[in-house]
Image 1 (tube, rainbow, N blue to C red):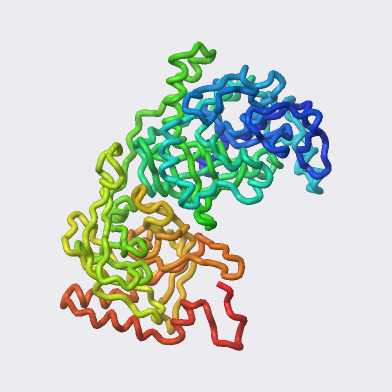
Image 2 (image 1 turned 30 degrees about the horizontal axis):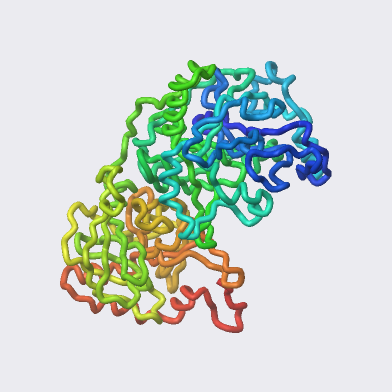
Length: 589
């Protein structure tokens, strides 16, 4: 394992909150509690919510002092009755005395070999015994790879900056949902209202752990979209941690929003139970913790988006400092050491960096629909036919990221009228449109058009999918999954990047060279079930239009684009996901 990833796993953990007297054995591993034992809860929870045990992921910020952070959702079912709602702006902090005295907080984390002798006596078999009821064979009765240590709550506190930015970015009327139907059925109103997403818990282990190399905490204002990140969390929380403890996934920082990038989005794939886990970045030989996961899954208008939402750790630490200034809480010295490191990222701004390439991506708005596009030159935009919707003129919006954060988001865009020079016919398999701007755009990066493709190479999709104009273009990463050819000519590119509505017309870049590989045309929908798969999508190879683009640049001649309407039937069948009748069953996609 890479040393930086081992450090991320060493810093990660699972937090379980329970009231032991409420837990009863169950052969189905369900946490049922007799109605007579139930106590009034602070939140109007459903019966399934007050079953006595909740768990999530967490991060050990400092193993020596034993300070741990996680999302606070697992604590709210145990809060005492209060007249102050935790969703109220007036509610700024809860302390340990706001919980019943018998609430047990247990932290489970990785147990390096050198720590076995010290903590062997603290290992519990509770999780294995419960899991064995499912018919699973425990890997080890001693669970020698993990340790379990009790912890105490120092505080529950909100991050209002995150709440403010989150509410602007993910409006309910836009169809955003952050829990699956199964989770809604299990957790009821507590899961639906999402009022706890911006709350975090700070814990202290009763026994400190062996110290490890100090982990950096990067100031969120220094983050750069497109940077490689790692997410570390435990899918399904405390369920069978022998397998699921501290799982690592890799992605990029897809987008940021709010004051000093308080809201972070990444395409690193996470599962329920990873809430409270960390988002890490490895920079200049040091691992940095940049955010805490708040929502591992999200949907928009019933389509899975494939992005994970996190809160900047910088802002959480700022809120801790504010609490320390006005309260006499113990362990102040331990908490005061948790400050972002003074570290400036070595931002790559070369011609192949994704940050540089994002300047070529625009929004194309026909008034009937909108999508993405790519500037091939200071006046020429390539997009999809279905974006312009038969319009003769469109509005092309260019994003300016250097405008200060405090300005309204609409001030970051410059709208220029564009004239549609060419659009393929509806029967053409190539969904292409060419737009010429009425004004010249300065500072457009000179894109290099690819001439060949390599299956398996790392790629980026850049566009305004899912979030639209609410922040700048988003970046998602993946690989070139397949190059589909007809008569040895590439006619379709398939990638594993997450692609959403609004991404159409956006560019597909090679991660290593920065070359423009193609134009995103669609992701995949199962017409039988209505399910959409954002990580299975298709792009039009740039080689299909490269000759026509060059001819227009040199001679102003559009006739070569007309050849896109003359594609043979084999190419049409590829793009319709069909084959000749009688040979195979017709595709359901």
